[in-house]
Every structure is written in structure tokens, then in C-alpha cells.
Length: 104
Image 1 (spheres, one colour):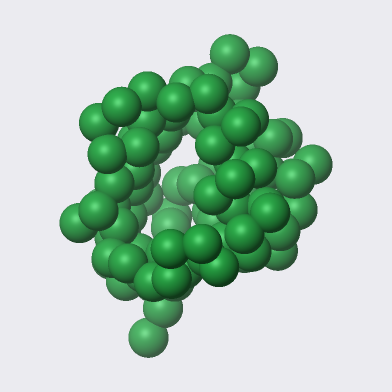
Image 2 (cartoon, one colour):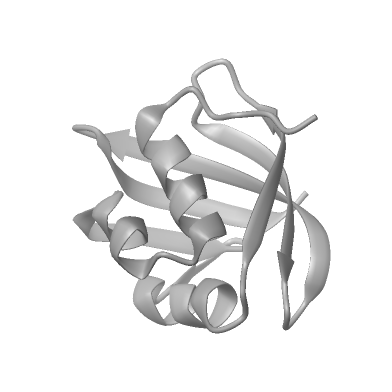
């Protein structure tokens, strides 16, 4: 059974990733949003293109924190295959200002 994030910004992020929708993805983020992957800050736009959009990235949510801002997901893309990942989101004024992801 797939879990669903209760935070609307996080839910919109997951929906955008799974739809491969760049416009919807970037609409979930603040203009100055940042991110990290396995503890290293990355260029968000370049990372998203490589890890999500050009590699058909998909998130299958396994578990969601009570506040809806931390997820455990099976993440799959055509570059790395499938791996269990953890995602933590910072939401500011209804949009994501930072997310951190890495292997779980």
C-alpha cells in the first residue's frame, strides 16, 4: 500500500515527480530553494534534470511522518534503478524551501 504525504506542498512535489512534470515540480519550490543528496548540497535544477526528469524518476512512498514532511520511499530511475530513500522537506509559506534526500 502506498502512503500519501499529508503536507500539501510535499504531496504536490511527489505528484510532480511521478508525472515527470517540470513546471509543476518547480512550482512546489520557493525561488531560492536548496537541496542535498546523501549529505552534499547540489545544484537543485541540475540535480532534478539528471535524477528525475531525464532519467524517468519515480517515488513510491512507503512511510510518512506525522507532519507529512519526512518520507521513506522506494525511488526508481533509469540511471540507478531502485533504492530505498529518505526525504525531508522544509516548507515555508506553503512551498518547499529545502529538501534533503539520501539512501535510507
